[in-house]
Length: 460
Ligand code: PNW
Image (tube, rainbow, N blue to C red; front, side, top):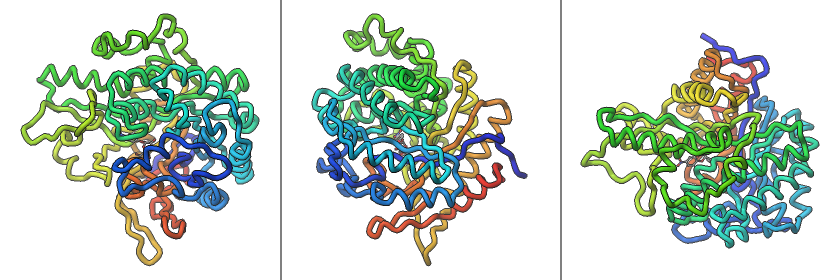
């Protein structure tokens, strides 16, 4: 049976600057926290860096041709802040602006709508040196950067995402330290959680001031948290705190100006001097849409003797993903990241978001995808599992839309195999295979399937 998507549905694919561009010291680009972190021994698998990555900076025309072949109507990419402002201050690097102008113009010429993410994790290192997302000063710097982007590109960019996954920025970056800048401090993570929420709001207003007609939203990573020990009150409280920490913090802030009470109570005095009088008003933004990145659901349960801590070393009060807690049948079929596969979760999630925050006009799935250990044989990559993941998630999404969830677009993560952060090049998420020695691109079986789905505007 084939299930149709709405007529105006946006089909797209997504990437991020540091994960694909390479050209780390070309045309005056400044250093970001990921340059520093990836070059710090022990932080990234194999010591991989994004110095070259997919060399997209030099090969974007080939990559656009691949997207044209795929048939997507939109492409979500991010701008590397330190290409435009190498020192994170007001000194512009025009060659950086010129690169994104070339990219945007080539996309438009190919009939592909560019969707811009302003921050997908490459903070100028100079700003981290002043405390990064844990220093409130970052909010004004981000708003200035947003203004410059809106002024330079706003005549051609209709859709803007302020930040990508502020949860990852705050908690992976400042609490458990697995992402740049690699800090391990609960208080810094709480500060970053608040400053990313303020930064979203400030950037939202900055873009709207330059381009009132632009559509502006925030992308968050979310999941459904399942309690596997429902009789245990402690676990129920923990699940609720997880939900507040991951799923509610930023959306509650932008819709109401308030953070979830259970979490604020848990943080207690730690928010003193961080969340200030008057911030409630600053946090609220009438977003045009929410971007949602969905990979899999989360599970919590009372600890069993065989359980290992979800996060070893560092401090992580709310491990978002404790796959050791997943029911046995799911734990047998993990992706290469060790994540469970829960396609019905995508449909459930968009229904939940619509129910809990009905004031948000519409949703866009800005990332969804899977990593598997692909093999290239006779010039082909038969990625059966990734293809099945794609189809199952789109079926779930389609049925939620049919039930009334206001979802206007889907962006597959990712166009290319790329630099998977702390996992380096070891984990492949692309629907196009990249040979990192030769930079050869080979569309996988999942690419062919996605192309078919896009052409039909239906999944079967
Ligand atoms: C997202 N977690 O990252 C990012 O937006 C992408 O850049 C990334 O490549 C993709 O998902 C796949 O990982 C996440 O541990 C990284 O909870 C880690 C987590 C969530 C999202």
